[in-house]
Image (cartoon, rainbow, N blue to C red; front, top):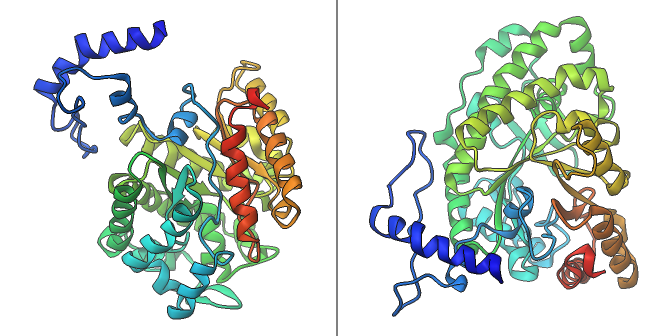
Length: 409
């Protein structure tokens, strides 16, 4: 009570008069989001605690920052997609994946389908990690059976030199979609943008398609490392701009998918992924310091300390790693054991959603307990799998909201 009362006094006596009469239009020259003017309830000239609640950042953002939260937030990777009937019906009407992921109205509709069904604490934009490539001069197709196909794989320095700076005007459908999603969910949920990491995008660009063994790009790293370095540098600059572009359009959080980083030995990850992730995160933090950034690498158990060292605010953890162990390892690596130095995201096994509701409840409960209740975002250890029962996803969200803090378990 005293904490809330003191907060009330500070805001009304000191901050509210200043915000009411002299709210600046902006606070720096790097195009920040517009400043918010706090408004008291109608008929009052004082802010109440209820009024202040309306101006809080979304729960997920506050959890990422390590603030006190009323419960652990929850969203799911591949939250929008084929497991939902409404998505399958829409996909039948618009069979081209690129049309669905590059048309503003369709992006918004698909992104909001799970929001309308489950009210998750995060709404991630429906898109693809390859979406920005044509804006750099790299064309691709999506085959319904083979997946992404790069029309002209890049394997020479001449091809790298031909790439141009990212043309964000060709990605207006992304910014427009994020703005519409943000307007729809308000502060009830965090809006998430995302990119693929430079290394992960490079695997598609060099291999020409999805790969099991990544022989072509790994051979390039051994035989012509200067070519791969030049490609990764260009991708890093472009992706940094793309993240800021998403933030300015409305993203509260941006996730970086280093999807194929786990296929590199640790020492090679240190060379071919880590420095480029660090540069992106450093530059975005300088330009937009209020935005949390997540790094998720599938099969990342052996890379956790390295991922945290990139400067990521949130570290995604797959289901093969014990969340409590992950917390301890990262705190020790930071030199401050048991201090919750970084936010963790994860890590329920997606396969449990094919099991009975009792198993889902137990999996969520175990994850919350191991997450510790603070600086934890409940998620799967990977994306929702095709064929997952919708009622199982609904049950996961219901349980996450009922159990809340691990202290209540």
